[in-house]
Length: 252
Image (cartoon, rainbow, N blue to C red):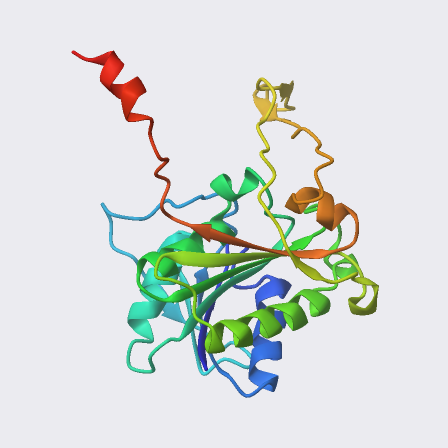
């Protein structure tokens, strides 16, 4: 399988390097196109009014790799273009430093890079390690998440997702043998409370919203808290079946 890796933590992030090692060791061809710096919470933003640049870089375990000044979504589509002669079978985005569950998927550059791949007609998988983003890198073990990502990717290879769909994998920060299982999960309906900002040292305001907690065992946030890795199927299609009667009542 030919795999393109990208992320939103930047091309030097240990998460993407761990992914490359795992996929290369399993015999897959690895290509990389990732942001040249951290682009977390970039959502699905793309660059339209300026040229994108991609600098070839040395990247262990990858046949070819580029660092781009684009967003994560830019990197997914640009990487598919740059590696077009090889033919990419799957785009894997991650491993993100921090969870991407519930409403966080709206903001996540990690998830939306995989979504961009799906919109380009390629299979997409987002991978996140559910640890605190401010923990030291020496405390973050990306190995278990990489092992699970490889298992999911190889499953996708044999059972492709429908066009426009993608998987989001969230893995608790536990040793591999400590993870209770890999289970399907629904996105928790995480709506943030009214905006809350704290004064910053430079005189500005720093956001500190806190998502509400849920107890429904079907939700990703609950399952990960209980030691499970979760796999959620997502799509770029935001349409909601409308009640035509309600719309017709609005009129002109």
